[in-house]
Length: 350
Image (cartoon, rainbow, N blue to C red):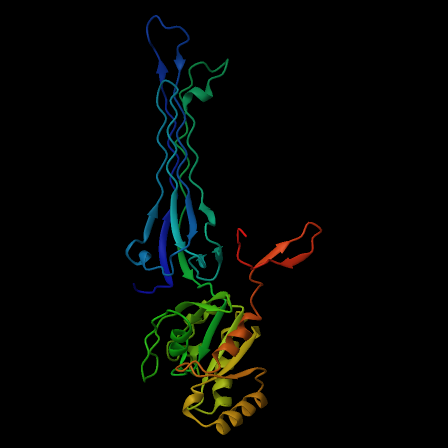
């Protein structure tokens, strides 16, 4: 399945059905007169966030969405049926933006969330509704209100608890493959990751979602490399893991490059807590690892974890630190309002 995180679509709600002009003229039937029914209301455009979707690829092939219009009124005081609402299902984390790509109209962050964006037009009144004691044979009616229409942009921001950042070839794909069931592509060249990857990490009887994005290089905020378009997928993360290749460029320089790109992008990324992981330590001696660790501390890194994504060395300590930034696994409420951790002891009939 291809990954698509942006799409432009056209949406239109249904128009209201027109009211009818009709008169009852049966012979030998008393109480004749106007009996034109009202038109039905047009269908709404509704966006729904559903679990199980992680791409907007469906909107590459279907780009026009039009709700059903209301049915016109008919004689014998028969009102027209309302048009069916059109429900557009999108992945959790999808934002709906105006055509200017800046104004956020909807932000769907929870599975099952449903929001009506465009209301269908109201149905028109039939001539029976205009009958009064002085206007016994009205012939006026309403045509029904038109529906609303607009172009919108869909932008997907993946929902993850932790995000991976770093320069190309820092070992992010190997790392996420080591701790999740993700099968990310690994290669000895830059930008092997061209689209975000999601994986579920199971650690200490806890689980959380980890997002891996393509590597950043200097000038990514101005469009260098794959640019910064994928940084939006880690805006909602609680903590960022910055992987630095111990065999790459100077670790302090690598730290500075990524920090500058996060700050240039904005969105609060530079304010999120970060854990620095010095990767591939299995390929160098311990003295060099200690020297680089001190250098990163001097460059401003608060917590540095020497790890190896290939062998798993040091990863447990790093994941323990990630859990510190996540909400409690299971919490129950006492009647008096105090909170206590739930008992994880398995149930037994004995």
